[in-house]
Length: 89
Image (cartoon, rainbow, N blue to C red; front, side, top):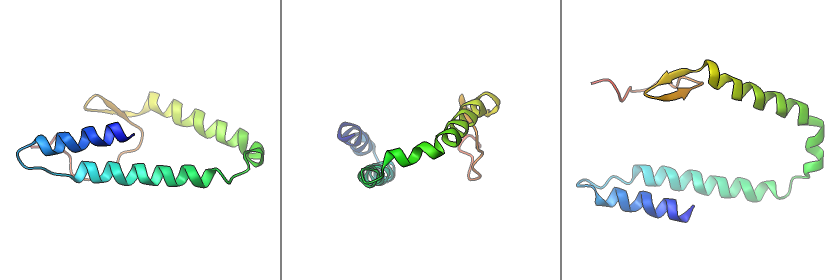
């Protein structure tokens, strides 16, 4: 994870106009992931047994959703997020 953050940071600095937005977003999500990881340490995973069939079905539906998803610029998109289209213009 640290290697990836260093790479994103160095790529951002190597450009003419250094924009650290991608680095900041990556750092935010990496920090959030570490916090969630440490919070999950305290969850008794045996209690998840009662939800296992639901979690399995949700995971299978998400995997199957890729087959019927929309192809945008070579990437499959299950959910269309509205916002500025980078391909336009």
